[in-house]
Amino acid sequence: MSRARIASTLVAATVAAALLSGCERPPPDVVQSGFRGTGMEQVYNPRRLEKVIAANEVPPALDPVDPGGPKAGQVYQNVKVLGDLGVGEFTRLMVAMTNWVAPKEGPEAACVYCHNPANLADDSKYTKIVARSMIQMTRKINGDWKAHVANTGVTCYTCHRGQPVPQNVWFKPVPLTHDVKGMLGDRAGQNSPATSVALASLPYDPFGPYLSDAKPIRVIGKDALPNGNRASTKQAEFTYGLMMHMSDALGVNCTYCHNTRSMAEWDGSPPQRATAWYGIRMARSMNNEYMEPLTATFPAHRKGPLGDVAKINCATCHQGAYKPLFGAQMAKDHPELGGVRPGSAAAAPAAPVAVPAAATAPTSATTPSMGPATVFFAVGSSAVDADGGKVVGDLAATLKANPGAKVSISGFHSASGNLAQNQELAKSRAFAVRDGLIAAGIAADRIVLEKPMQTEANISGEDRLARRVDVAIR
Ligand code: HEC
Ligand code: HEC
Ligand code: HEC
Ligand code: HEC
Image 1 (cartoon, rainbow, N blue to C red):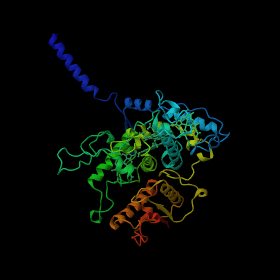
Image 2: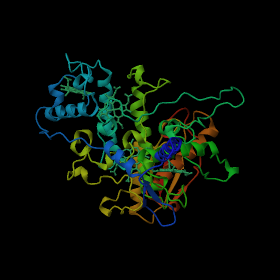
Image 3: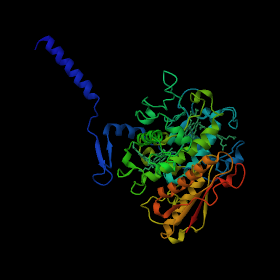
Image 4: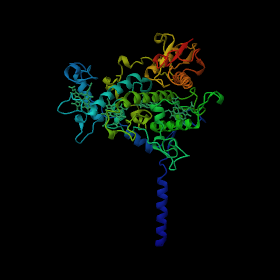
């Protein structure tokens, strides 16, 4: 072989190797998850899976300690949240928190990351103030969002993984405008492939509208056009952006939660979709109730380009796994964070919050009483919050226990603001409650939307009692 030919063969081989290395080897595994012919299957790449598994390993639990003894609230000076813990349990949690979130080396390593070593009661470090809220947030997730986290629950490690700042957080992005100002206007974040939407050319901020605000996640209008169908193409694109994020964050395909027969219909969707429905509400409520209020506490270098605080999305906990840490139950070793010990009284499913469609109906002994129920809403919002979620969960349980019963749902609004917009809002609130019931496994034909006799609020100004949805059981 001449030199020139050897060289050109080498070049060809190198080019081929370079091209091939772009392909994914070994071939991906395909696992069928629904009826044949519906395309309901999960595609796994074994090499990617290996990486995700390595990233989701769980640190060993600390040895349990005697929960008795004097209370931390009596022994220490400035304990505002953990006062009820025995001193042993309190110290064990401090050590666990240090392992889970504090830097491992450097001047800020270990306890001094949150504490002034000269005085542990001192609140001068922002990290300590943040940590106090984080303890409350973790308890709230484990206690009030069982519809999503079940008894698996979360600890600080679920998000932090040994780092002060969780790997996956989001900020409000700087709005992108066209290079040429004027006619073309706002690009709505499009045509700039972003990792937030798994590199699709979809609007790159699917988080602000859905995980801070409560914009409707809709592609298909519920009414024909003349009745004010507001589901626009742009809305569809934002919805798909969120869906790309959710799939990417969990390492699953769309069909993990949807039946290809109809993406919108709840009947026939896998039960995971109902879990995801609560996940969206949970992430939104964590961002609004815990992260936003910490904005002033965080130093500037921890904030986003628009000065907002880092916020939570699905990837913050899931990190590529269908369940965070592949379902490892770390929280059970930390009842002080709201984790549930197996075999304890609390481990029995308490109020059946979100009973997926396939779950059995509660027995008559646990049948909640029948009666009208009310879900309240925040100003301008149609988002069902944690308290509302409980009401919806109880209603779903009642309906399951009484298969003959139906509900009628009516939405209301307070008097302040624009009437036409308020009436839309009242309608969205009714839809939100209906969707919650359907997500919890109630057939759509058992739910009747009823326009209230009097749609205009009868009380003036902002009134909490007016921002509501009434549900009557028949
Ligand atoms: C991630 C932040 C964080 C780390 C790391 C941390 N702590 Fe704390 N610590 C707190 C918070 C928050 C409180 C207040 C709890 C409350 O208000 O209920 C606290 C309170 C205390 C108190 C009570 C002080 C008093 O008199 O009020 C002691 C003692 C303490 N921590 C010890 C430790 C030790 C020892 C370590 C290292 C092993 C440690 N902490 C690591 C956040 C942290
Ligand atoms: C659901 C996810 C989640 C859980 C659970 C969670 N955190 Fe956080 N944490 C965050 C996010 C998001 C931030 C903001 C990131 C930043 O600091 O920029 C944060 C920030 C912090 C900070 C400030 C970090 C810094 O250096 O600026 C501390 C301290 C902290 N968390 C402690 C805790 C402790 C202690 C727990 C458990 C009791 C906990 N977190 C549980 C999501 C979480
Ligand atoms: C982890 C579960 C999950 C995954 C994965 C997922 N979705 Fe969704 N999807 C949902 C939930 C939950 C809703 C309803 C959200 C709501 O109403 O708050 C929804 C709503 C939708 C809607 C709106 C239907 C309507 O009512 O108009 C479309 C369309 C959609 N998804 C498409 C997709 C596509 C395409 C993918 C893959 C890129 C995908 N989804 C991946 C859970 C999921
Ligand atoms: C605070 C942490 C946290 C956040 C944030 C979070 N999840 Fe989860 N998620 C969990 C935990 C823990 C489980 C496991 C529950 C269990 O064991 O049944 C879970 C389970 C799920 C499941 C059920 C998986 C299965 O196969 O049963 C789906 C689907 C899901 N999450 C979707 C989402 C989506 C979509 C988002 C974002 C909108 C989200 N999650 C945000 C913690 C979280």
